[in-house]
Image (cartoon, rainbow, N blue to C red; front, side, top):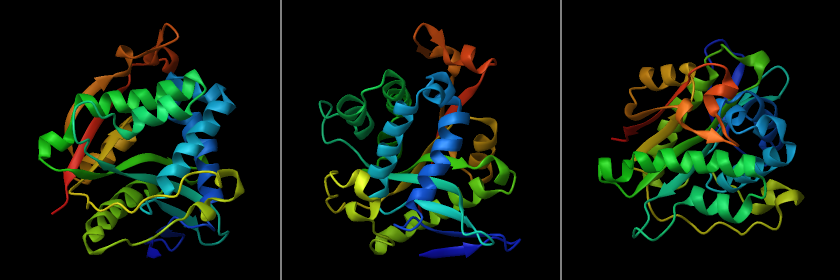
Length: 256
Protein backbone atom coordinates (compact mmCIF):
# COMPACT_ATOMS: atom_id res chain seq x y z
CA UNK A 1 0.00 0.00 0.00
CA UNK A 2 1.36 3.41 -0.98
CA UNK A 3 0.88 6.13 1.62
CA UNK A 4 2.44 9.23 0.09
CA UNK A 5 5.13 10.79 -2.07
CA UNK A 6 7.43 13.21 -0.24
CA UNK A 7 7.11 16.89 -1.11
CA UNK A 8 10.39 16.85 -3.06
CA UNK A 9 9.12 13.96 -5.19
CA UNK A 10 12.16 11.82 -4.34
CA UNK A 11 10.69 9.19 -2.03
CA UNK A 12 7.62 6.99 -1.83
CA UNK A 13 6.32 5.89 1.57
CA UNK A 14 4.63 2.51 1.48
CA UNK A 15 3.72 -0.45 3.66
CA UNK A 16 6.38 -3.13 3.95
CA UNK A 17 5.85 -5.92 1.41
CA UNK A 18 7.55 -9.08 0.18
CA UNK A 19 9.23 -6.95 -2.50
CA UNK A 20 10.69 -4.40 -0.08
CA UNK A 21 11.45 -6.72 2.86
CA UNK A 22 15.05 -7.61 1.74
CA UNK A 23 15.87 -3.92 1.25
CA UNK A 24 14.41 -3.08 4.65
CA UNK A 25 16.66 -5.68 6.30
CA UNK A 26 19.65 -4.17 4.50
CA UNK A 27 18.85 -0.77 6.03
CA UNK A 28 18.73 -2.36 9.50
CA UNK A 29 22.03 -4.19 8.90
CA UNK A 30 23.92 -1.21 7.52
CA UNK A 31 22.40 1.58 9.60
CA UNK A 32 20.63 0.44 12.77
CA UNK A 33 23.09 -2.31 13.68
CA UNK A 34 26.09 -0.03 13.05
CA UNK A 35 25.00 3.46 14.10
CA UNK A 36 22.18 3.08 16.62
CA UNK A 37 23.23 4.11 20.15
CA UNK A 38 22.06 0.87 21.75
CA UNK A 39 23.74 -1.22 19.04
CA UNK A 40 27.04 0.45 19.91
CA UNK A 41 26.38 0.22 23.65
CA UNK A 42 25.79 -3.54 23.44
CA UNK A 43 28.43 -4.14 20.73
CA UNK A 44 25.91 -5.44 18.21
CA UNK A 45 27.88 -3.30 15.75
CA UNK A 46 30.83 -5.67 16.22
CA UNK A 47 28.86 -8.93 16.12
CA UNK A 48 27.35 -10.00 12.77
CA UNK A 49 25.56 -12.98 14.35
CA UNK A 50 23.87 -10.69 16.88
CA UNK A 51 22.83 -8.43 14.01
CA UNK A 52 21.29 -11.44 12.25
CA UNK A 53 19.23 -12.13 15.37
CA UNK A 54 17.90 -8.58 15.30
CA UNK A 55 16.89 -9.20 11.69
CA UNK A 56 14.85 -12.16 12.91
CA UNK A 57 13.12 -9.82 15.34
CA UNK A 58 12.34 -7.54 12.39
CA UNK A 59 10.96 -10.50 10.45
CA UNK A 60 8.74 -11.38 13.38
CA UNK A 61 7.49 -7.79 13.65
CA UNK A 62 6.88 -7.65 9.89
CA UNK A 63 4.16 -10.27 10.27
CA UNK A 64 2.06 -7.71 12.19
CA UNK A 65 1.56 -5.87 8.88
CA UNK A 66 2.26 -2.42 10.34
CA UNK A 67 5.83 -1.67 9.18
CA UNK A 68 6.70 1.03 6.64
CA UNK A 69 9.50 1.81 4.19
CA UNK A 70 10.73 4.81 2.22
CA UNK A 71 11.71 3.94 -1.34
CA UNK A 72 13.89 6.19 -3.52
CA UNK A 73 11.79 6.72 -6.64
CA UNK A 74 14.74 7.08 -9.02
CA UNK A 75 16.37 3.79 -8.03
CA UNK A 76 13.59 1.74 -6.41
CA UNK A 77 15.93 1.22 -3.43
CA UNK A 78 14.60 0.95 0.12
CA UNK A 79 16.46 3.72 1.97
CA UNK A 80 14.60 4.06 5.27
CA UNK A 81 12.40 1.81 7.40
CA UNK A 82 10.19 1.79 10.46
CA UNK A 83 9.78 -1.74 11.75
CA UNK A 84 6.69 -1.46 13.91
CA UNK A 85 5.28 -3.95 16.40
CA UNK A 86 1.78 -4.40 17.80
CA UNK A 87 2.17 -4.75 21.57
CA UNK A 88 -0.59 -6.22 23.72
CA UNK A 89 -0.72 -5.79 27.49
CA UNK A 90 0.01 -8.96 29.45
CA UNK A 91 -3.00 -10.41 31.24
CA UNK A 92 -1.21 -10.85 34.58
CA UNK A 93 2.09 -9.96 36.21
CA UNK A 94 3.58 -13.46 35.71
CA UNK A 95 3.24 -13.21 31.91
CA UNK A 96 6.37 -11.92 30.19
CA UNK A 97 6.19 -9.23 27.48
CA UNK A 98 7.14 -10.01 23.88
CA UNK A 99 10.68 -8.57 23.96
CA UNK A 100 11.65 -10.56 27.06
CA UNK A 101 10.37 -13.79 25.53
CA UNK A 102 12.22 -13.14 22.27
CA UNK A 103 15.49 -12.38 24.09
CA UNK A 104 15.24 -15.56 26.15
CA UNK A 105 14.09 -17.96 23.47
CA UNK A 106 15.66 -16.73 20.25
CA UNK A 107 18.88 -14.87 21.07
CA UNK A 108 22.07 -16.90 21.26
CA UNK A 109 24.37 -13.85 21.34
CA UNK A 110 24.90 -11.80 24.52
CA UNK A 111 24.93 -8.60 22.40
CA UNK A 112 21.53 -9.05 20.79
CA UNK A 113 20.04 -10.33 24.04
CA UNK A 114 21.39 -7.29 25.90
CA UNK A 115 19.89 -4.89 23.33
CA UNK A 116 16.43 -6.46 23.42
CA UNK A 117 16.51 -6.79 27.22
CA UNK A 118 17.34 -3.08 27.38
CA UNK A 119 14.24 -2.33 25.29
CA UNK A 120 12.12 -4.53 27.57
CA UNK A 121 13.58 -2.93 30.70
CA UNK A 122 12.93 0.66 29.62
CA UNK A 123 9.45 -0.26 28.37
CA UNK A 124 8.86 -1.81 31.80
CA UNK A 125 10.08 1.26 33.68
CA UNK A 126 7.34 3.29 32.02
CA UNK A 127 4.30 1.06 31.59
CA UNK A 128 2.29 2.96 28.99
CA UNK A 129 -0.54 0.44 29.18
CA UNK A 130 -1.11 1.47 32.79
CA UNK A 131 -0.34 5.15 32.21
CA UNK A 132 -2.94 5.49 29.45
CA UNK A 133 -5.25 2.71 30.68
CA UNK A 134 -5.10 0.84 27.35
CA UNK A 135 -4.51 -2.79 26.35
CA UNK A 136 -2.80 -2.41 22.96
CA UNK A 137 -0.21 -0.15 21.33
CA UNK A 138 1.75 0.22 18.13
CA UNK A 139 5.45 0.49 18.97
CA UNK A 140 7.86 2.10 16.54
CA UNK A 141 10.46 -0.57 17.25
CA UNK A 142 13.42 0.02 14.89
CA UNK A 143 13.77 3.23 12.87
CA UNK A 144 16.72 3.58 10.49
CA UNK A 145 17.85 5.40 7.33
CA UNK A 146 20.82 4.70 5.07
CA UNK A 147 23.58 7.24 5.74
CA UNK A 148 23.47 8.79 2.27
CA UNK A 149 19.72 9.48 2.59
CA UNK A 150 19.71 11.08 6.03
CA UNK A 151 18.64 14.68 6.69
CA UNK A 152 15.67 14.27 4.33
CA UNK A 153 13.12 14.06 7.20
CA UNK A 154 12.38 10.44 6.28
CA UNK A 155 12.42 9.32 9.92
CA UNK A 156 9.85 11.94 10.84
CA UNK A 157 7.67 11.08 7.85
CA UNK A 158 7.80 7.36 8.67
CA UNK A 159 6.85 8.05 12.29
CA UNK A 160 4.02 10.37 11.30
CA UNK A 161 2.73 7.79 8.82
CA UNK A 162 3.03 5.08 11.50
CA UNK A 163 0.63 7.12 13.65
CA UNK A 164 -1.80 7.42 10.71
CA UNK A 165 -1.52 3.68 10.08
CA UNK A 166 -2.21 2.89 13.75
CA UNK A 167 -5.35 5.03 13.67
CA UNK A 168 -6.64 3.21 10.59
CA UNK A 169 -6.36 -0.20 12.24
CA UNK A 170 -9.71 0.34 13.96
CA UNK A 171 -11.22 -0.36 10.53
CA UNK A 172 -9.22 -3.56 10.04
CA UNK A 173 -5.75 -4.48 8.70
CA UNK A 174 -4.22 -2.04 6.24
CA UNK A 175 -1.51 -4.42 5.04
CA UNK A 176 -0.68 -8.07 5.52
CA UNK A 177 2.56 -10.05 5.51
CA UNK A 178 2.80 -13.84 5.59
CA UNK A 179 5.71 -16.09 6.53
CA UNK A 180 6.05 -16.85 2.79
CA UNK A 181 6.59 -13.13 2.13
CA UNK A 182 9.68 -13.22 4.36
CA UNK A 183 11.56 -15.60 2.04
CA UNK A 184 13.17 -19.01 2.62
CA UNK A 185 15.46 -17.88 5.44
CA UNK A 186 12.48 -17.29 7.73
CA UNK A 187 10.19 -20.01 6.35
CA UNK A 188 10.27 -21.94 9.65
CA UNK A 189 8.78 -19.07 11.64
CA UNK A 190 5.34 -19.67 13.09
CA UNK A 191 2.47 -18.07 11.21
CA UNK A 192 1.03 -15.05 12.98
CA UNK A 193 -2.34 -15.41 14.64
CA UNK A 194 -4.67 -12.49 13.91
CA UNK A 195 -4.48 -9.76 16.55
CA UNK A 196 -7.97 -8.95 17.74
CA UNK A 197 -7.06 -5.79 19.61
CA UNK A 198 -6.66 -2.30 18.18
CA UNK A 199 -3.84 0.09 19.25
CA UNK A 200 -4.98 2.99 21.41
CA UNK A 201 -1.52 4.56 21.64
CA UNK A 202 1.67 4.75 19.59
CA UNK A 203 4.91 4.40 21.58
CA UNK A 204 8.64 4.55 20.91
CA UNK A 205 12.07 4.54 22.52
CA UNK A 206 13.89 7.61 21.23
CA UNK A 207 17.60 6.87 21.67
CA UNK A 208 19.22 9.93 20.11
CA UNK A 209 18.74 13.66 19.79
CA UNK A 210 17.34 13.44 16.22
CA UNK A 211 14.64 10.92 17.16
CA UNK A 212 13.80 12.89 20.30
CA UNK A 213 13.24 15.92 18.07
CA UNK A 214 10.90 13.80 15.94
CA UNK A 215 8.94 12.85 19.04
CA UNK A 216 8.66 16.48 20.10
CA UNK A 217 7.47 17.63 16.66
CA UNK A 218 4.85 14.85 16.60
CA UNK A 219 3.65 15.67 20.14
CA UNK A 220 4.74 12.45 21.82
CA UNK A 221 4.59 12.66 25.62
CA UNK A 222 7.84 11.61 27.33
CA UNK A 223 7.15 9.09 30.08
CA UNK A 224 10.72 8.54 31.26
CA UNK A 225 14.24 9.67 30.39
CA UNK A 226 17.23 7.44 31.12
CA UNK A 227 20.99 7.87 30.73
CA UNK A 228 23.06 5.32 28.84
CA UNK A 229 25.64 5.77 31.58
CA UNK A 230 23.30 3.73 33.81
CA UNK A 231 23.25 0.64 31.57
CA UNK A 232 26.15 -1.79 31.31
CA UNK A 233 27.33 -4.48 28.94
CA UNK A 234 30.37 -6.60 29.85
CA UNK A 235 31.40 -4.24 32.62
CA UNK A 236 31.32 -1.08 30.53
CA UNK A 237 28.51 1.45 30.39
CA UNK A 238 26.75 2.11 27.09
CA UNK A 239 27.82 5.74 27.48
CA UNK A 240 31.46 4.74 27.74
CA UNK A 241 31.29 2.94 24.43
CA UNK A 242 29.51 5.89 22.83
CA UNK A 243 32.17 8.25 24.15
CA UNK A 244 29.62 10.73 25.48
CA UNK A 245 26.57 10.91 27.69
CA UNK A 246 23.48 9.98 25.73
CA UNK A 247 19.91 9.87 26.97
CA UNK A 248 16.99 7.78 25.80
CA UNK A 249 13.32 8.63 26.13
CA UNK A 250 10.31 6.35 26.31
CA UNK A 251 7.44 8.32 24.80
CA UNK A 252 3.88 7.78 23.61
CA UNK A 253 0.97 9.52 21.97
CA UNK A 254 -2.70 8.72 22.35
CA UNK A 255 -4.50 7.75 19.14
CA UNK A 256 -7.73 9.75 19.12
